[in-house]
Length: 195
Figure 1 (cartoon, rainbow, N blue to C red):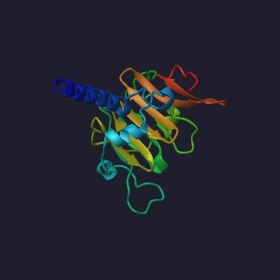
Figure 2 (figure 1 turned 90 degrees about the vertical axis):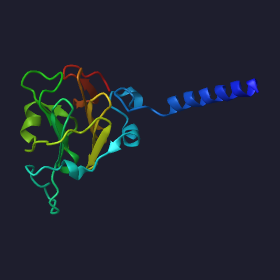
Figure 3 (figure 1 turned 90 degrees about the horizontal axis):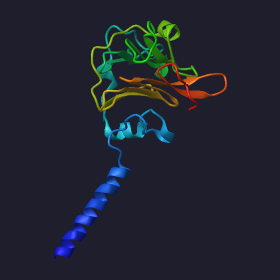
Figure 4 (figure 1 turned 30 degrees about the vertical axis):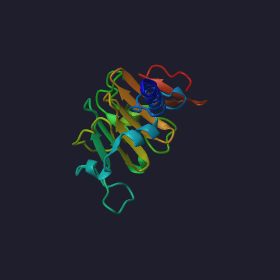
């Protein structure tokens, strides 16, 4: 009887170990494919709660260009108070006090058709009008126009559309940058090691 009990405890422990390895807990930075700092989108959509995009439409944002349904842009507040959104054709970005940004550099965005996420005046000049009314809670996400934005368990903000993404953490901001030769994953605006 005692041997059966030990065997069942051993099997239960082995099963728990296998599950802890096979099922990621939260999709946090650094667990993306190939060591990417971005969360794995498959983890987010599996382990996070999806919220309806229309809960984040605001009355002060213009209707989506070319959309006759009256749809509006998605606007949400990050846990740190950044004004973030998803707009036409899946473009996305945030404005406010962005960690790691140079003084006065308060916009970061990707616009459909761009080769990379960018920041500064080029992001600010294209940033659509609108002000978020609601915070995207931890461990939740919203998807709109093929772009997903999420708030991780650690209150980081992630947005991604295909190969394009940004991750805003208290320590810095990661984003996909580009030069004329290749793409990079950049951190805190100053460093872009090959990605």
